[in-house]
Image 1 (spheres, rainbow, N blue to C red):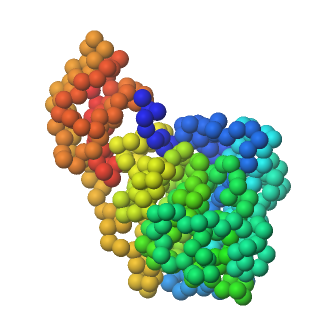
Image 2 (image 1 turned 30 degrees about the vertical axis):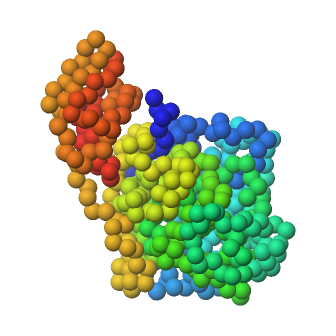
Image 3 (image 1 turned 90 degrees about the vertical axis):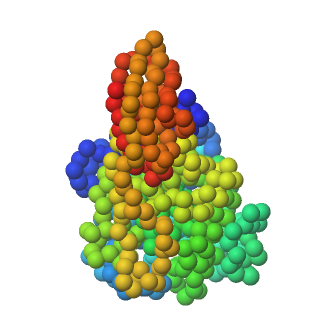
Length: 450
């Protein structure tokens, strides 16, 4: 029955603090989360796999003025060693321990193929960021190459470089602000574009420009070759001037870029979870931005994953228009009636509003109204009658108009998903007791037992 649905795995540690999660538990959580998401058997031996972490910055860029310095030369990112964030469970970057276990699992199903780690940071030097965050060869003996996309393309804006691939805009191109020298093409690292499998290892964050960071944005912004997309020629790698970071324009670019080379699997490091994303811009302090979520997520449907991830951090996925456009192309689904969350916790049990910048930054990086939602109320649902006999469940429900689906469980096993005619449920059911969970379109939930 579950084959009809997109599955998003959601696993939370039982530890009270993300910093207390041990490396051994990280490994176990990674394997459990991947298994719940359907595993990695889709990767075939001999294929070329790219593992793409999120290493936007190695510092917490707190306050109102510091974010403006992201457009300055490299040295500003490293002038104060005390500002460098820890490698583990920091919320800003993908924990290298997760990447190590994923790399091991990839090698288990693909012992002879190529495995690359690729990244293109938004602050400072990607090579330096990789080293500082533990992405070094000593930690990744199973990886063929750790690639900084700062160096793809031999010179600034050389779209004809041998390691650059220029792809024509999709037929339903959304982004209308490409510079004339881009020739209405989108540019990729050649090894990345020609790879067989892409795994997006992202972080659970909201975002001051885009609203939400997920598996899609980690690819659609995070693999852009810096020689092509950086703002200025004199050493900076900031992308803010090459591609518009206005909310709708950024979403349009992400639609186009991602559609040309979608990821095949997503894994979310939510060990900390980060507000004031992507790197604490506008946060009163680093600690104020860390959300202590203790989560991991994964899915073969990246759009479904980002739909669930957005809800967890207080973002209405219906406001992410690029996600709907990608879903309309058949790349994934945003339809919550077609998404099943599997794991040891439900979305409604953990979701909460992640704070966003106010003051100057809130004005400069204006997120439109409606992106962040404020409704955390359980939907109306009442079990009027129930009969379980002869292998059948017959139940009558009284639900509010806000209910979009009812999931029916026998213990931990999902038996059925009802998306209409809630007033009279009549299904095959073995057992004498179970649970019905009614959801609204923000995955607020009411749990009914019988």
